[in-house]
Length: 78
Image (cartoon, rainbow, N blue to C red; front, side, top):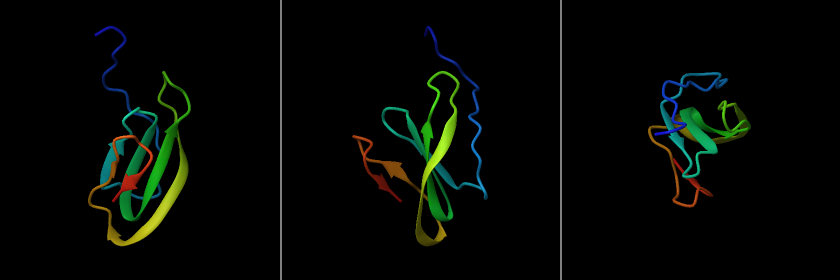
C-alpha cells in the first residue's frame, strides 16, 4: 500500500453542519449535504487535499439526508 495515507482531514469551510458526505468516483470532488443545500468541493492540490467550494445547490426544504455522484461523476443525486 505504497503512498496510502490514513487520517487526513481536508479543511472544508462550511457555514453549517453537514449531514452526508460523498466523493466522486475519481476522488476530485466532494459533495456535502446539509439543511436546504448541497455544497460541491473540488480538490485543488492532489497530495494535500485542499478542497475549495465550487458550487452550492439549493433545492431542499429540510435536511439533505443522502447524496451521491453517478458512476461517471458528472451528476449528483440528493
